[in-house]
Amino acid sequence: MTETLGEFGRIRRYFAPLAGPGGLGLKDDAALIDCASGRSLVVTVDAMVEGVHYLPEDPPELVAKKLLRVNLSDLAAKGARPLHYLLTTALPKAFGDDWVARFAAGLAEDQRLFDVDLLGGDSVSTSGPAVLSLTALGEVVAGSEIRRSGAREGDRVWVSGTIGDATLGLKVLRGAYSQLDPADRSLLVAHFQLPEPRTGLGPRLVGVAHAMCDVSDGLIADLGHICEASGVAAAVELASLPLSGPASRLAEQEPDLPARLVTAGDDYELLFTAPPAATPAIERLAAELTLPITPIGIVEPGSGVRLLAPDGQPVPIAAPGYRHF
Image 1 (cartoon, rainbow, N blue to C red):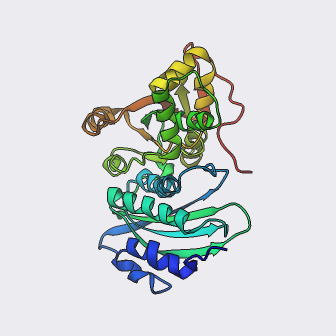
Image 2 (image 1 turned 180 degrees about the horizontal axis):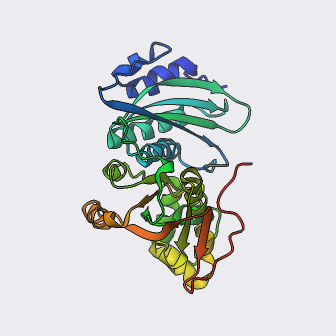
């Protein structure tokens, strides 16, 4: 049996170099965080399970980046600037030092990209699939965070980027859509394996958006969370759904595809409501960030989310989004 570095050897070699000053070199069992006056810490946690959130054959560096990015997306949805993170890994013993080294290398690249650092965490073994959990911390001016509960009747509903690419990318990895050209398949796979947290947009929406969350379970499901928290309803126009080039080409062959993509998860785009008067400011942001931000509906009285066809008729929704249970 090949000898490995072991738990503490891995921590010293691969993870201690990722620690910021508050992580104390990962030599203590707790970290220190300075809280700036007039600011609030925003804390979020997400877990990923091998075979559920990523495929066993996915490169370890991309698994690490996805784990970090889905948490940064939650911070962006609160309008927060990311600062630090804590990491817990439960890995099968068959995962050798090389897997851990590549995983840590992926974290190191994204730490530099998003200006965050590691504070600490835990490392355990498991006889089941790998389970990875990351807690991200950010900061926002106290009282300015964007919650789910602020949507108001008459608000427009907006979403960044495109919708549905991640679920199509997963299907490509499982052998579907072989008719697409390689560039289209690669784009869709990248959306699944390497989501783009909108950390540049989220903080810029403070004072603009009334309510916001990211699209993780599916656009309809996540808009439903906003509506429930805010005590309102919403109507989404299916024809306004922003689709990428590959998704649009697939929709020409499968006319019902957009109605399925609106309930697909793992997009990690920002979904928010804002008053009509904020439209020019949002359009300026879209131009400045070179990021599509699309109005897709309106907030209305009542409860729940309606999906409307181009003729105004309701489109049936079997399930609004992904559920673990």
